[in-house]
Length: 76
Image (cartoon, rainbow, N blue to C red; front, side, top):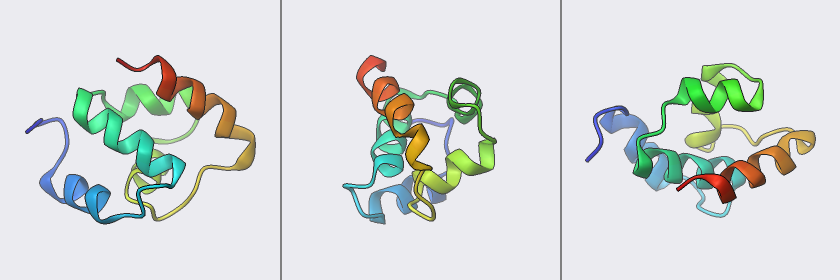
């Protein structure tokens, strides 16, 4: 278990609809321990926005889908 994320965020991510782009991003970032601040900076949004994507509360705007898809491909 990675301690960069709270147990609550990890549980909400697991319970969210897994085919949503933001949830996929969250799953990968949680697994790899990538800080939300790093993701927010790369995409150009707030940390709260990224958290909301991770838990499936909101979907990323369509114009960010390409950036997020590329980010997902590049995360290792």
